[in-house]
Image (cartoon, rainbow, N blue to C red; front, side, top):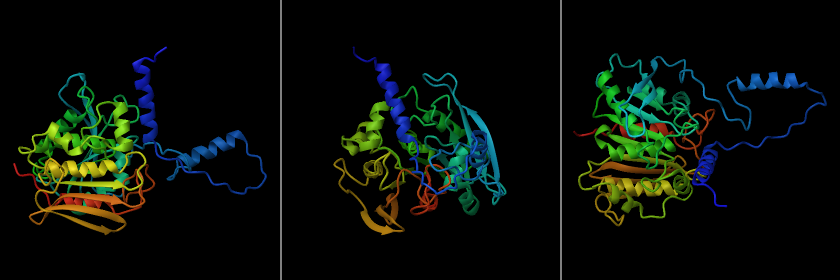
Length: 369
């Protein structure tokens, strides 16, 4: 008897959630004294361990609602935004966190960095793992962290693939516009970054609404335009696209009229959730959007620079002395934020500090309107 389509889709969704989960560490055996421990004592001990700063080996840390760092002097605000309803979404509330640095007396004309978390992350865990608020204090910019609702996706994943009835892109765009207007941030210096599913949504946002952002950063993200469902999304994550990545862009965007989008792409060499082939294909796609390569993917203007530094291999697309697209492949890194806080899921101390890398790229970019 043939399976129902709905059961196949649900199985695919379960598989997608499982590959998004952080890898479990192998437990190490230790020699212990032959002492019997009661069940109640074991439970009490487990509670003490789970509530401490570090989670036991093999456990997935639970999201915490506290601010990213108590020691930070700036303001951490929590609220929600009511975006206009879209097809299939009559209620379009979007929770978010906003960090305002203490180093700036006024928010007027401050740059804004928008950060889109990945699956099984919250605004707080993403802020802690990337240390973005510490960077904001030093550099003088605000941070906006939209947060996916568990009612929209049980694992907290953004709907990054092409499904107009599900995607949160319009709500995020509406939130960015509202926050920029309310606080008087510099609309020409709004930057967007994301990891994994957040990177997928960031790419879709930048391509659909380039007037909002001066530059974007895509960490461990999927190639754009190749996935149209949960099942095809899984295939893209594991293998990249079998189609021509440049042709996928040309089919969706009028490149000659697209204003361009400076982009930095970071990816782990050993990423087993979103294979690094996605980063290579994304690099070509954004080189095409910035009119650096032709329809065949061949370099059209400027130059390519290849180099290695701090445990990573780089390709820079440079035009007129300005770095327009950068690809960074971090050697030995899996599906995790490079140079982040390893106590948070999907963040690793290995590799260059991706947060610093992104900001150093962003601060040289300004949207011309």
